[in-house]
Image (tube, rainbow, N blue to C red):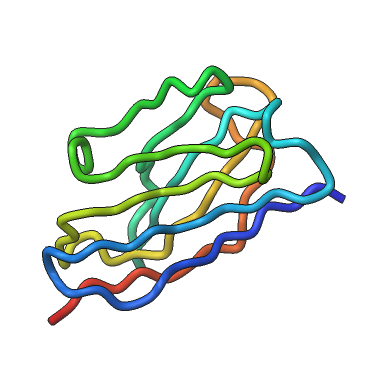
Length: 118
């Protein structure tokens, strides 16, 4: 059974950092395009970034320069390093994975809460 599980969420102060982890099981993540999304109550899930199988990464303007996605295929793990966190980064963060890179995602993790507050 293919699964992806996020961890590393929690409370951070404004200006602080957190690193999220997404670990795959039942498959080799090296074959997948991977992504991070976030969602707050009442809003649509929004993309945070994507990393291709080649390691090329993409970010929306809202997080560009502050967030970095990386992957360690040997550990079957993807990371989201979040720096200079702001209160509006507060959300549930989800990892996503798909064997294709067309913008749809077959697999989703269960989410991990990130709260940025003083």
